[in-house]
Length: 382
Ligand code: SAH
Ligand code: SF4
Image 1 (tube, rainbow, N blue to C red):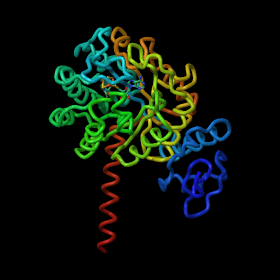
Image 2: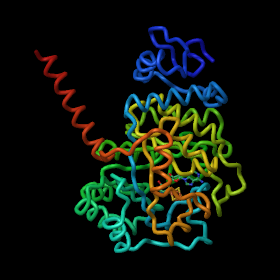
Image 3: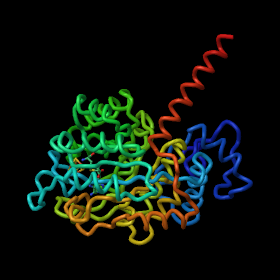
Image 4: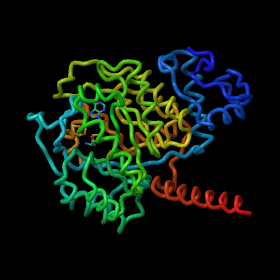
């Protein structure tokens, strides 16, 4: 490790920073100063931390979340509306070459009734997710976004893969404002080997295009893929840091049923959680989700541990039960995050559901930033 880093991988700030990680009260003001200058970048050593060093690292990340966002976490629902996919990612059961999978597109009326009349009271946002299926966007997603914006106060996120500019525009006009599009893998060679969507270059271009055309973009990567080296893993942080993002996720690699990687080992949960903590310290202002796959990587406690590394977004699965089994991102035997499970997981960590929607939060933050920029310009002109 180089001399200018402390043992948690922090670049040493200009003022000396005692390595009192994990001591909540005395270290708190120094901690705030150190994490808000965005000088943190992880090392392989910190991503491999275990035991006391790991606990202190996670505690520090969770403290950073609490300082920035308070005890509130955003609660979003997700509906998975089609498992048709024109892509062929080696890690995903919905890849086009999986001929065993029976394909579905959800019914508009069924989702409309569910979301308008029977959605859980705790959610403030809804995410619409699908395999890469332009047909379902026209048939169902666009009218559903319009309906939700007209009939409910929900903020709308979409996770639909790489589309074209005109579909992005139509989705935005319909009222969706958050686009979730993971870059998946930052190393272009591994990206190609894993047959991740389209090309690496195109995926990154679309992330930039979306952000520059007014979307709030959340991206992310997969930790623990077969053949992923330490350098590949660190490259994910370098790429995430330079992209125009509002949020970022880490998913543990789960050897998907009916994929060429079904026999590969599941990602190490500790590695995944260390990546989440590192993201939080690298970007205290990002919205970072706890993904349901954490409970597949460590049944029973992965999810709760994710919340303890500084996550501030949780997702309740609202996909109609008869469709869920065929939405084959990971395993047929899914761990479904219901409202009850989510509320008890967050309250066990002393967290509370946000009353403000994530979409509303981003909008407010944009306004605040514009106002503060114009005040700075005015002050400079005086
Ligand atoms: N088709 C869209 C959205 C649905 S897939 C898209 O690809 O963007 C949502 C995410 O599931 C993908 O971004 C991918 O990172 C993740 N995923 C799929 N299979 C996975 C696996 N076996 N392990 C971990 N993450 C996986
Ligand atoms: Fe399709 Fe997304 Fe699965 Fe890739 S990860 S096969 S794009 S659903």
